[in-house]
Length: 203
Ligand code: ZN
Image (cartoon, rainbow, N blue to C red):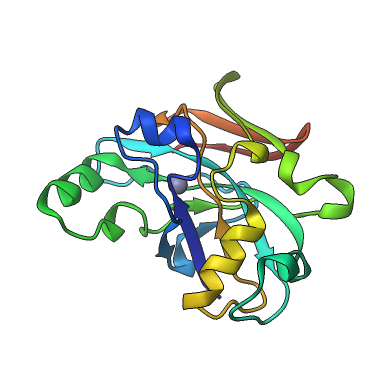
């Protein structure tokens, strides 16, 4: 399986990063070794001093598809979860400044905590999902999928023009504003439509 991540899919986050709002989706990959399941602790990596949290709605693909029309995209997923796109911001800045790819800041082991998945039947309108992240019981990020620049179905249509989507692939759909640093000892909890999805510690 593969993990596809969308960059800058919320206007307020693009602004806080001083990045332009994109006119088409930006995507990158994480390897499956980045996944962190079952609320396992995240071990702060030695190679960064500025790891940031990015809470994101995650789509699980359930059918093989390529060149999927947007109007049929809803047939390619039936479950949604929450994930964190951990980002070593210091390494990412260094790469950006040099005009290099910034995989190193996103793809490392443990950089993709993932929750269990909820059937969309139990979530209601996928274009109006509320989600938020609490750090040490204070809400630091809050978003709603209605604020996405590119909707879930638009993302699936766009991505599948370039990359065949396979059963079990995950799409991290971008983070709302409020990204910030984590430190050892922090406790992160993430919620989607009032369901506690993630609850783990930084070690
Ligand atoms: Zn992200």
